[in-house]
Image 1: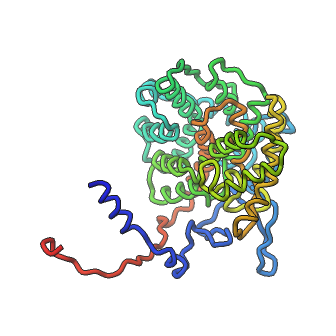
Image 2 (image 1 turned 120 degrees about the vertical axis):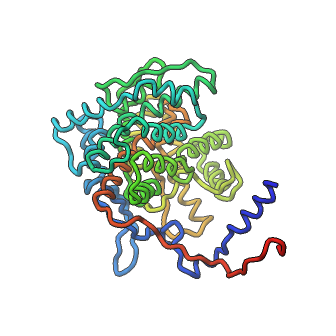
Image 3 (image 1 turned 60 degrees about the vertical axis):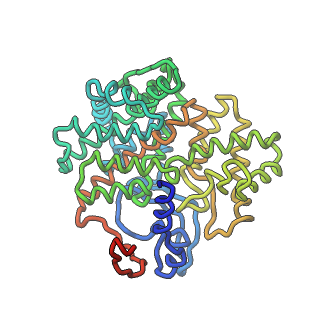
Length: 443
């Protein structure tokens, strides 16, 4: 019965692909050359990858701006001071300006005050219902927190800001505790629940809570902090941030909005690519015995794009981006720093393999595919490598993305409320043929 109904559902849902071209439908809200269809305005983040000269698109090295400030300048600023940068980045994205020393310290204290979960929440909502998927844990926990908020449906800016700050502060605990419950109940490992420490940065607290002995090096924490900074925002057009705008425009509550954004990020086309990168490299290391053999690496990459290796999806994971062509600034910044951690961990040879693949992959793709724009390594190419060096389990890769991106979601939610006008409702054209109703005995 179910198989028959499945076939019917599939048949009635299939639309002739030629109709999308006929009616000029922008699939994915993007033009064929990769340019996004303009559906909104934002002052939060900007992704820049080309210039237009005499009506011709000219690709340029990618740029990412947070509130008008180049991400390179933000990163170089806190790295030069030997500071953690994620909290400063949170402040910038939420409030539109860089904090001074006192403002930053006060903001850190405010986040620290919001770190603790409600009494018995970890036991009742996480430990009693362990899940094999941490994004499910996050979404379920966020919706459950609605019940602990006496002003859950209040959409005033002050209340929404308070709700967002509380979620930003407690996301690390929700994710790490969810993993510890999974590891204990499904992996039969010892259960460790370390409470976050108010004097630590968010990156430090993640490592402190995750590891049984709570130990970590300064370099490890700095690399994780950098990854959080680079994932915090990416313009209003990415899938989860757009979902945030769409749901916020309906007037719904913060918890429903963030749960929907988490559902979007859970999708493998959005948040899970760095897992695929790590798994792809593990397969590559088994297939390519000599990591210095460029021809062997190129041959493996060719098999990937021709659906003959790894998962046979035809993808070189971590290469290519919907917007960037010449370079992804996030990947460039990570590459500069990941070399240090690879040396500390004694796996510089593997880092060199990543560099070779980054160089060869665009050439292989160009030989085998028709491309409308260039491709380069994206942020996922190196972020998964960093997480693996930090001994972070695969189950937490996408939740780490969420821990960072909730800052951008929060800023976009507030921006949508402040500029609220109409509910977001794009147009769909029906292409079904007209049919007459048939009486049940005549069917």
